[in-house]
Image 1 (tube, rainbow, N blue to C red):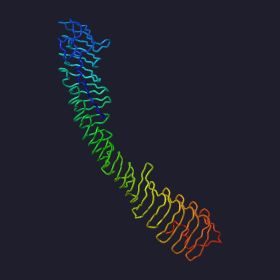
Image 2 (image 1 turned 90 degrees about the horizontal axis):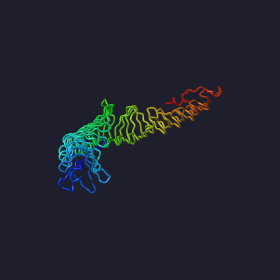
Image 3 (image 1 turned 180 degrees about the horizontal axis):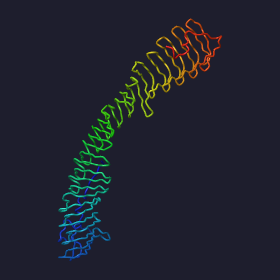
Length: 455
């Protein structure tokens, strides 16, 4: 809650022009004609007084209107009763000199009984007065529209009271020297806060409840979490950890509504930062460096794809990874991934082969060199996952097939060398064998023509 200061008029009682140390016998403090004088507690040159009421024993006395002015400037206007030249009883007083307005009673130079005083700072104070001071609870309307009801001392809120804000907010609790100070409950814009205020600032342990948004218990400063605390959001996600200026900062944990861990580690500026352990959307666990809420830096991710370890770089555009992946079957891939797809040069070591190849968007794209554990060696070129370009395959028995692919289909001249050294040449058109009969003969191992069938 914003700092609110509840300030009274201070020594506004002294603003009553007739109240003060002057006595009826002190001619320097008297105004008016000798037979109907006014006691003046604040004399200065050029003052004059007019009185519309009666006189008794040389002093103004009875009901009437009193004006005190200097030249053409009116300093004070009083409508009410005077006794022996002094206000005494119900009246209305306006002082342009001291910028106050009072409606109520004055007895023996003091505010007395029920009255309303508008003070120099604009505060309108309604109270019962005793010997010039508010006695008991007061109602005060402050500049800016703050409305205070409660105990009052030395012209300031003091003791137990309630302040109503122009925006509908409310603070109920203890005040000292015009400021919230002590246990209090604040309600504003849907938020309820229970805690302790000191010198106008909420400080220390607090309970913040905002139905439909969050519930917080812990340390705070001016209703912003500060220090250690626990917050539960509208979805039931719980954060336990440290806060600075209302944001998660330092070590903390996030737990889902069902109790399972979502994140544990460092925070900065309300975002994951530092070393942490994160449950990812695909069910994988990431352990490693975090920055500005993203996986950035060296880390290890374990999930359905296997174990990935290396350098991570995550942004709004997705996740980039460079390192090694070992899948649950023990197959190993080394290189670069973008959004979980191979990208660029990759080295794959599987139960079937060792492959060095170029990938784009998860598909073979460019040169590929595969060596199968059975001894077959295939060099080929791919475009968007399809054979397209030069092709060369060798088997352990010495047989060789070489030629061209286009859009996944054999194209043009092919040469097949069998293990016994015999050579066959064939012609292909869009994958169909168009070799003239006199130039062709059957092969014992036709699979040499298809690299994806070689093992």
